Length: 314
Image 1 (cartoon, helix red, strand yellow):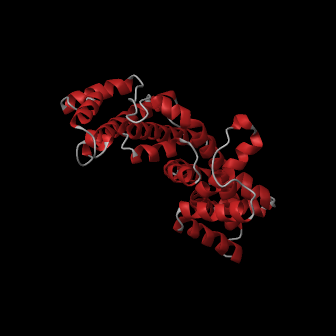
Image 2 (spheres, helix red, strand yellow):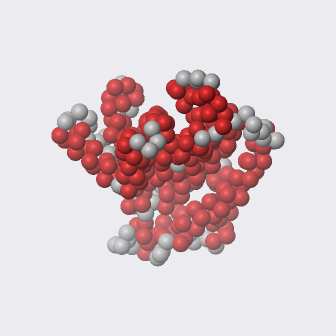
Image 3 (cartoon, helix red, strand yellow):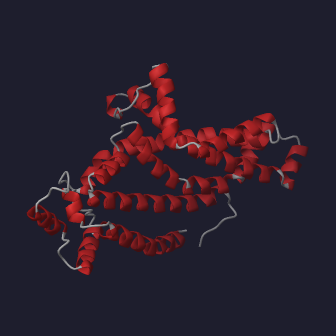
């Protein structure tokens, strides 16, 4: 196992290098002079020159890349051109709402999607199955921000059960924290639930058609045990795979959801940075999100041995 982990980590190095090159060139691929874009149309030549010197844009491209890479290896993601604070500090300050939203969304998604997927597979071909799969198709078709506004209109404006927007830190109390996350979690999890529910149903149907499942039914194994203990565990590998690859959807959805609900997380930080042409923040967040995505997929690969003992890594 240790050898496999080392090989996987080494195999990530080319991916990290490609991501780093792309993120570095992000500043230079933008049309026009990046320094002039950052300071605005009415900036003086002296202000533009000051920004160019601050970002090192007056140096040769290869020199800029070497300096930026060395800083990255030391954990330095640069300084924000708008706030003039280290990017790592800004990301750390905004991390709690994003981590909380991603965590509650993941829990909500797994619970709802597994229940819907297992139920749909158990009732395959029935009206309930067609209804669940129809809702899953709807989940792929409707943009998440539309779902968010509909939920705000229903639960916040009409019923007045939940806050319209904002985020309450967990330090202010568990209940206010949960109330502030209910609508964002449902909004972000809608597409994710649709994806995992469909995959769960397909994987469960494949397992339920196997000979050993028919043997278990013939032996009189109770239906709940048959579905949950035998079928779901054997169908877990493709489900876990989709959960891992779906993290990309989760990361992208955080940006939209935090904007809709005015949550001061990393996603909102990215939107503000794009509006202000704050390239160091954009570069830093892309690097962090890429690292998180690669680590999640590594954890998913390692989890296969838990769900299927036949899988061994050497």
